[in-house]
Length: 501
Ligand SMILES: Cc1cc2nc3c(=O)[nH]c(=O)nc-3n(C[C@H](O)[C@H](O)[C@H](O)COP(=O)(O)OP(=O)(O)OC[C@H]3O[C@@H](n4cnc5c(N)ncnc54)[C@H](O)[C@@H]3O)c2cc1C
Image: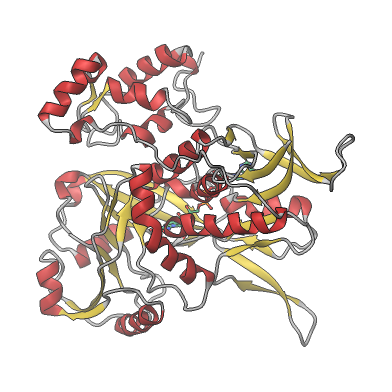
């Protein structure tokens, strides 16, 4: 029996778990995939938003402000890379320039520090590679970039180190409330997984990303929202192109051309450049394939904003789903139920199921807001349970997999002296050593799949995209995890690398 069950180990579920591990509570996370950070949290723009986009007085705006207050401490405690590089929202030839003034006003209301409107000369001083068609920009110095894999994995790892249990490959398929024999309190949540396992908890926190509506509807009669996913496709450029921009560069949307929504050209924490995303309504069970049409659109837009960008340096593409939500609202006059796009996050206790907390519709800036959402959810839990003791032994610190490449020569030599596996370079593009792979496998919430290893070390994420290192990595994984190489998976079940004829 658990005090709390969290469904979903994306960035939100992982930070909620970490926040709850500050209390003496028995916490369980159920995750349907074979690893944490496997859905929305793994495929996004990785921007730590400054907050001028959020409508004032929304919970989104509140969380974003709070996130900026706590992010430095969180990244230092969790050893997560975060770079405050600033951002420019740029209008080319005055297209969409009204939105720059609107967002500036929003930013002032949301107390976003240091925002200002720049004209051509100042834009080009900050970003010499931007088109000279740039006429106006909104500058926000507090925008940052963060590694979403690191952020999610670090939070989950730290939660586990502080006592939280994580069950992977555990898809929740049914929820009910049951009164247990020999347990004389209120009815508990009975949570059934696809593998026939059952868990019981006093509180259930729904952090299931694009599946939050399904989870809510399994137990609640108040089916007040649906998730309407919007797909976004991206292009990744090699580090050779890494200096094309210094800030996160957003392009304004063209108000007269709904298809031209503007894209982002942004550096990542690892020194690559990310272009995208597109935006297209989709269904939750669509696959995250990319399309020629959207990739062409992204490339054309990137050329408009940075004419000298070298698109021969593309190394990969990916796509993700925004968990946008629609609310079902009763029209006061007609009594009819109408559908309305939710403009805010949904973070609240269910109206009819005590102890069910929905954390849904967490679209952008959900990555930014996750640590702040987690604080709020933990406060709700404490309120529901009444007095909850603090976990005096909570340790906020966690160390990441050491990045050999980033060490100076003396530290590299010391590391090799203490552990010879750091001498063996497995991925040449990213300079990843065997020592890093072993560390990523043998830690709490360690890698068990190739994608898991990539997320923790960046193996295979360089220019050759794993062509030279995948087999070597699989051999090490097979040896360390004692799994025959033909049974190793790229990600979930069914993604084995070698199929017997
Ligand atoms: C294209 C795009 C760009 C974005 N850009 C940014 C950005 O730059 N900055 C920013 O701040 N935010 C951004 N976001 C938003 C951000 O990525 C999300 O808000 C955040 O990742 C949502 O995290 P989550 O934990 O709610 O969802 P997820 O990461 O999807 O986690 C939910 C988890 O629940 C699990 N789950 C679902 N159903 C079940 C079940 N039945 N049983 C067990 N487990 C289940 C899933 O497997 C999944 O792992 C972007 C999003 C997208 C898609």
